Amino acid sequence: MNLEPSQLAILTCPVCHGSLRRDGDVELVCDNHACGLAYPVVDGIPVLLVDEARRPDAARA
Image (cartoon, rainbow, N blue to C red; front, side, top):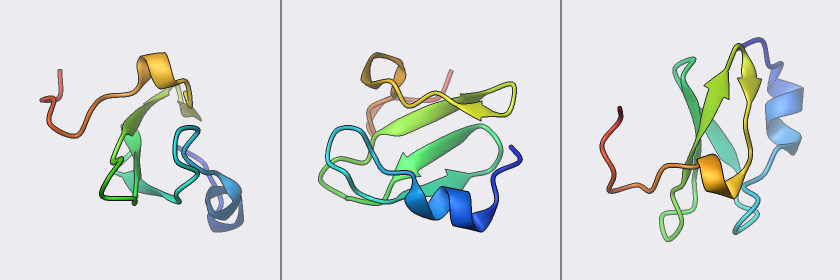
């Protein structure tokens, strides 16, 4: 994922508007512990769609 820190700083969770952090190159995770949704990164592009997000208690595929 080729996101600059300044780009990552402006991205927010579409559900709770919390900040997002990188989890390797595979997903962005919401820092809000009440939300915690994990959004996939496909071909280097974050997919910030709620329907594509993984719940915090769901195992990775």
